[in-house]
Length: 100
Image (cartoon, rainbow, N blue to C red; front, side, top):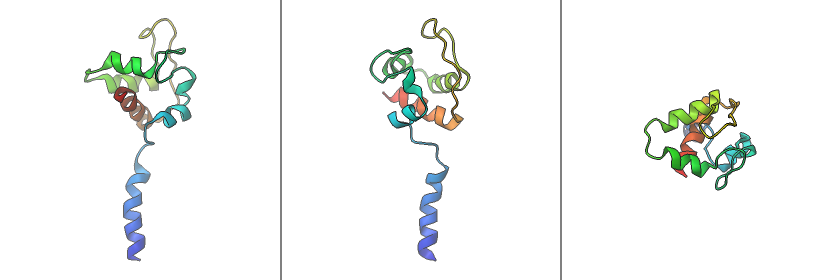
């Protein structure tokens, strides 16, 4: 019984966390249809996004909001439609992009 309780104590926090943001989450979330890590595709590269917003305190919240609600005019004429992501995954992706 002690072993079961110990395992559950370790596993529960992991179960509650959003997916770890990474290239895999970006691919799974279909971000890679329009973006690449290093090169412009239909939208800017993730590294271009990170450079543009480097050091801005509100960048993470702004990027999360852009993913969830869409955006227009930040990177040219092509709008980014709202994405079907959980708020936690959008925030995790925003953190990951800004870390590049």
